[in-house]
Image (cartoon, rainbow, N blue to C red; front, side):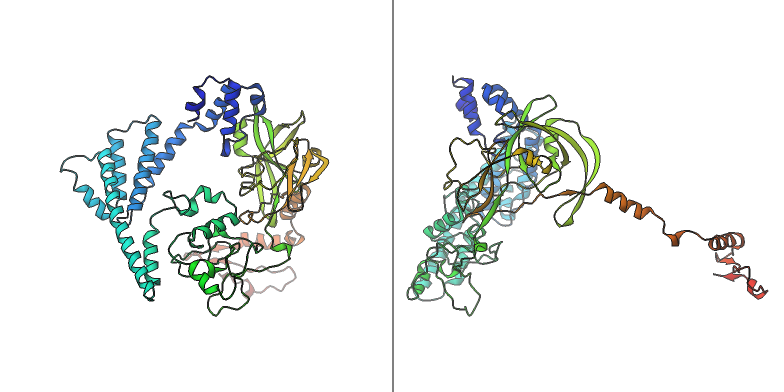
Length: 567
């Protein structure tokens, strides 16, 4: 789409490059180096992206694996059948787009994979459309399945509406509708219908919903009057048929709605209106943190305990996260060309690290080593390779050569979730070392204590009490420190502190293992016993050893003592 929109225009290459850089997302963001941008070299930037991401073989393998990985549909459900059709047609279209022939055997293989995934009833209906002796075609099979989806959707939707109406009628007459509500909900859960945007996917997979902060998600759920636990309509949390609960606290609410002890936004409802509110809001009984209508109660429940909203001044109950120091730096490959990568500055590491993928991308030479390292919890491992990388700042002419140990992976994505910068007031005119510090991304390089303080400068700016600080460095202004935020409960903790075992200690342990204790030194008496055994032993027909007992020189010898013994 970008090529259709931009490449065919008469814009200058520098303008095209500007639009291209702004359009990059995910791992591609920041891939274009500063020199290419400053030179306005649009063609070179496009070539870099093609070399990195236009791996035709990998894309074909992904789509073939997707076709082979289709699972069997357990019953004739229109939602599952629609998902199967969309999956199959999507992979086939992409393979055709990659100029792969789809005729003959390849078409029959795909038809076989589709038929293998169908439920028993649908497969019988499909088989009845094929005449004896004829080979099924892909187009006819997909057409049949699309028609089948339409039929099942009309029939199943009518059944669901009937069950829902019967349940409502019983509820109005005062009869219990819990069983019917659960049945209707169970039937509707097979339809991946998003309660937020209306698209065909589960609510918890909605990209617009996931992009919100936790408090904003809570407001959306409450506004649409849907269940706080399964994120679907038609029932209360108390009657939610889902057996799942929050992965973080095991309480009856969805993990996306979890807040760590945050009750500042909770407004308790009056006791007199609690029963009425419970009927109008299906989530009122849960006491979900952050819900503006959740009641706060100090009474002990007689049945299953609820999630309690607690007001406290203890700062440890506030959601907090430490932002680590990251920077975008330029590194040189084997041809002295500049490439952009993300580095983590860690003063808790005695050595620097680089990922195997970055070393492969740079094409630089590595040296075989055997370096033992120790991490958190005294976990030990051994690094087998090292290399030297030329690192240059994006902000000035500062550069340095860093010796790195090569590791398959340094740490997880940092930060683990995207940080909302709406309430941040970053000073104008400051050159950030990592403009995308708030977006999760992979770490390619870890700069340890060997260069940490050489890079840092004395300047420091504090944004406010709830935000991290800005630290001046040779690589630009680094963002790091404690972040107090209501929506950072989904953060994962990262720690990269490692140490190298001293060579003297390792050699000392080696010699301790290899040394021979005084008790192990053979004495002359032991040597005599061994010589006596060698000279006198023999084996009989049954395999037994027969030998004479050894006697000391000052012992009294007798005939009986020289009798051979059998063992």
